[in-house]
Length: 247
Image (cartoon, rainbow, N blue to C red; front, side):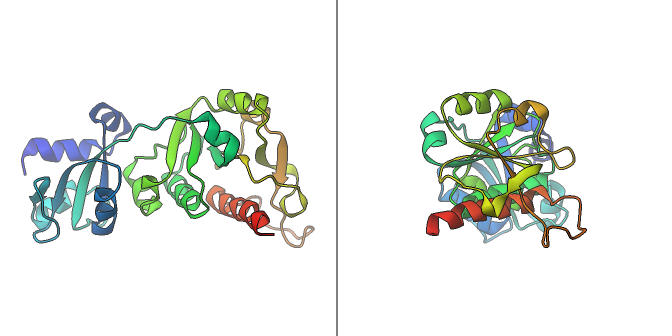
């Protein structure tokens, strides 16, 4: 490998470089195989001998993999993938269930939420511009391939939600003063807003929420943790929305 190649790969750990190069890093044989068979375009694959073949593959040594890997434990293969450009379709917001993330900043949380969206058939996620980057290497790994099927859009979240509200789309959000999730009427379509790990949903975004929800502890009067992890809470809420469709 050349010094320039190593520098390029290492630079993609930084969001600004990813945007400038239009590339993100994906590591692991299974993930790369999924990407190769998806709509995403692979620019280059660096792998130990015998793992992959093709004009876009370069064989590297274990030592070189250690130098270029962006993970704590180097994988056997690393790919440079072109960042896809998604267009937010207004029709999708009206006919499906959408997640909206208000300043969710932990890469592990974002990756898990993208994976949850994939599991529950949610194809679009709206993120505030100050949320974690979905092409951060840690996020990509945490999605376990879901990043290939879920479209993540970075938008002025309050503005987009205001437009959705004016279009009559139900907007749900989690609040301590909300009504219990399990006894609230839920619609099969709408937008579910999840807030920042420490501060919750911002006042500007909260102003657009039409239905405030609470995930109640059990029993209700029992002293418990102050809050749930945002990814865990997202899983609980998405599961309840989908359960209602089966009734």
